[in-house]
Structure formats: C-alpha cells, structure tokens
Image 1 (cartoon, rainbow, N blue to C red):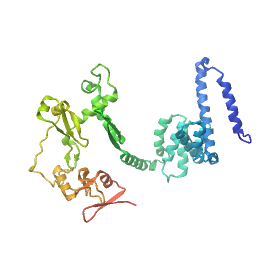
Image 2: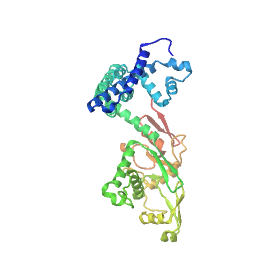
Image 3: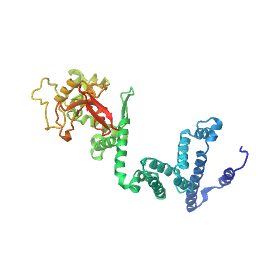
Image 4: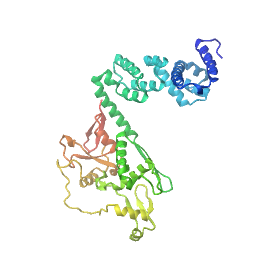
Length: 414
C-alpha cells in the first residue's frame, strides 16, 4: 500500500467503486439509441483510461528497480498475469508518446485518438527521414492526428505511408523510391521456401515471398481456379461437395507446374532443370509397381502416376555433339545461350565473386558491360555469379571491379 494518498490513486479507487455500482445494472433493457451512446462513450473512456495507464508506465522505471524486474512491462505482466508481449508493446508506445510525440499523446489522453490509431501514427512518424526538418515532422504529426478523427487504423496506415507527400512533396518521390528499395531488399533477404516430408505421401510447403512474387503466383493460380476452369481444376469434388479455395489453389499449383514448358524455365547451371523418372517399359505400360524419382529429394511414386506424367510430359532426347551452336552472338540476343553457359561453366568453374565458393550449378550469367548499355552477349563480356552476388552486381550501392585473375571484387560505395 502507498504511504500517502495521491489524486491518481484516489481516482483509481473511486473508479473501482463506480464500476461496482455499474455492474449492478442490466444493460439488456436499454433502448437501442441508449446502447449505442453507451458503447461509444465506454470505448472513449476506456481509451482515455488506457492512455493514463501508459502515462504511468512511461515514468515507472523505479517500480521495476525495486523488484529487480527488467522493466515495468515485465513487472506489470507478472503482477497482473497478463501477456508480456502485449505489456512490452504498451511500454514502447508509452515511451514514444511521453518522450517524442507529445501532440499525439495529448490526443490519446483526451480520447480523440485510440491506441490502435496511435500505434499506426507512431510507426508512420518514425519512418520519416532522419534528416527531415523538425517543423515538418511536427506538421506530419498534427496532420495524422487530424486524420485520426476520420479514418480507422487500416486507412490511417496507408495515409501515413504517404505523409511525406503532404508535408514535403519536393523530396517525397525520391524518399519513396529509397523506402521501396529497402523493402524489396529486405523481402529478398527474408524470402524462403521450405519442404517438409510428412511421411504420408504428402509434403508441406512453407514459403515467404516478396509481395510482387506472391501477387504473380496468386494471379497464375487464380487463372487455374477461375469459374470457367472449374470443369478441370476446381469447383465440386467427386462427392459433389464444393472444394475449399485453399485446396483449389493447391491443385492449381500442381497443374501449373505440370503445364510449364521446361525449355522456357531459367537454366539450372545452363541447362533446363529435369526431373528424371525411372521405371521399366513393363511398368509404364501396365501402371503397376513403383517408379523411382531422381531429384534433390529422391523418392518413389506409383507407376500409375508415372504413366500419367508420361502422357503429358515432353520427352527431350539428350543430343551430344550438336552442330551449328553459336557462342558469340554479339548484339543479336540478350540472353546467353545454353552453349555459352557450358563454355562459361568450363571457364569459370563457379561464382567468380572474390572469396565466394558457390558451385557452378547455382550460378547465373552476368554481363560485365551491361547489355542495356551496349555490352555484347559473348564470352569475353560474360561472367558467372551466384544469385547473391548477381544482385550485388546490379545494386547501385556497390561497385565491382574485375581483378587480373578474372574474379570480381565488390566494394560498398561510401
């Protein structure tokens, strides 16, 4: 117990008593207009009460010190049996409102901005350029607080992303381009695709993709799952039940892979990636038994499935010693041919970035002098780089120099 009373403690105790009295009243019999008014007013006061709690959290580091807690969020979560993650989010917002965004903090305390809106506004303000003039930052804060009177968090978030166009339109376009580049770079760095064999004949696919890639994939899958294609890829199942959208997309993904032309896929070390299915002619004709699959995850499929694939797959014979292959195309083509890829593999043996050990099968051909700037598509102007270093070669933040031994040295520009 506190040794001395304080107006805020008196308020908290009085609030507790008022809530006890309110709990004895049944809201069921209120008319609809009164219920509507009560809901809005309770929400507003709830937000104001939460704002007061945040104000206290922002100056309550001494509470944590007395109990050796890491911070007041940890202490409060333990004392109230609440979610620690939520308590830390509240503490982060509390400190931002108390130390930096006073205009927003006042609006939250007055019940004019709710906490969900406040979090969105803080993120938008903290994303502004570090060198933006203080008066423009203040203008952005005031403008977003005004917008909170008209829009919810989702719309407010979109408007917050473009606040620079309102307060500093002369630099907004360049800054937007920089932010998009950063987002795209982070998206590439966190992109992943994982396969997990479940042992029941299925594999769980887990992926995180850049938005642009995910949008393109969704567009392709929707082309397979649209109503006009329901007779082949979706709609009702064999039992007459409607197929869920998630399953339709899964079936569409399988169909998409089977309809891809291997000759048009990116080369795997210079040659189209191939899945090899091994089975006897007898198995192929009868559809009985198991067939072996040679891929990065070798396994078996039924001979029936292999037989179905054989009906639709393009069988491409491997021809050795082909004639008429042109290694030097000059300006006649932008992309390196398979023959040029083979010559580059023999010459470079892997990624030629200095110190990189990525093997040749995972490399891509890069124009030393850009094709768009007049660089020819020939061996002298070509070099093999892994995907990572190929991105760096096109990243304006880096310069790369060709060393006497043919390696490429990357240096971040200052």
